[in-house]
Image (cartoon, rainbow, N blue to C red; front, side, top):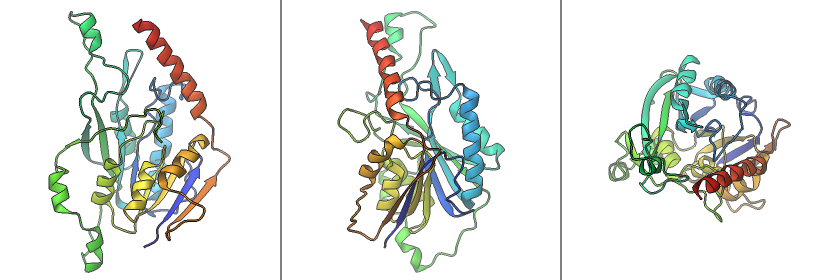
Length: 297
């Protein structure tokens, strides 16, 4: 079965390409505010970040079909010693825009896969009270619902969407904590310098919250992980990404070819509100790293 996929480079607060109520599942990982080693200085302040999330929430309310699910992979961010409650605020904004808070999954990463630094090192250097900051090995998957869902009568045509209960049990999907190895943005990888989540997260969510042939949306497409997995699982997809510099990375990850060997259709749109961000962000990240190196010497 051929699927279609539409990549739009532009601001996801304006998803004019998507008809009302035509999306069946949203999976995304929004920018972690001004996280020092990913998005330094991207927003002028926290209120600007929350304004972005509110604009996205309004559009999600419009494009998601009744009763369908929006999933955010995110975590709180510490900047200059101050912890910003990103998880709670995204949840609050979505609820204020009419969504129901359905559930939360803790995504636990393996110990030792900390990407940037060990906060506990401060305690080791200063073994006294009040120096403690724990090493962070988890993120949260917020699950919100757009009203009530009307369960369909299950017929043989739904068998292709049936969840493999052996996979469900062996992977312990039934728990509120998922142990999944994270993607380290190492040199030479497609995700180099990009905060991408592992494919296992959208794979589980797509199987749990959508049927074959339905449509998945990622408003912060990044390297294209959600779209890649949607295509593998025979779902259609929309992906919005404001940074045009990520275009070659997305196309490589999803397996785009001008001469496709399958019936899948991939369309690419570049709007006037798209920007170029990756180079400037990476330069800022390098400055952050050089400061850290100098501090450690």
